[in-house]
Image (cartoon, rainbow, N blue to C red; front, side, top):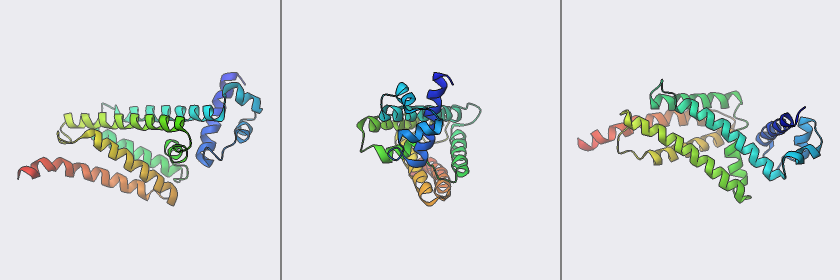
Length: 203
């Protein structure tokens, strides 16, 4: 087992254990036992549990960002179709997990934002980056005439992210996909209503 593969295995174990138990309930001993290496191997790569947790967080965010880019930058679909495909894929993925794990970013924001300024700052950067991606896609939707020009896409992107994160938290709590499907139904029903507003105001 090479040094790089050991580090990768530790990070993967950390992601899995953090999702199952949370950060505070996940000890270093459990992580190294999951990989089958001595505790010294952990400290060879990571100076502290916090440093390890931040790297787990960053790796998870990198994967989700790449996933977002695949869907939101798909030029073969209209901007709104990209968003619909993204939401459907996310719903399906959480359904396959029986809504038990939720989103590591959301989980850590609930657990760590008040405990660690380093975590809070990084989590905020990640969420802001997601809003940027949603807003860019919505801006494309404006250009394509799918949503009205006077819609504040930044505000709508914030609303989108906040609503989705709340739906994921609720789904995890009740172990049901119902909140996810409600989000899916309402968020796309709301867009046509927005699109009608300029005409309605002129009538």
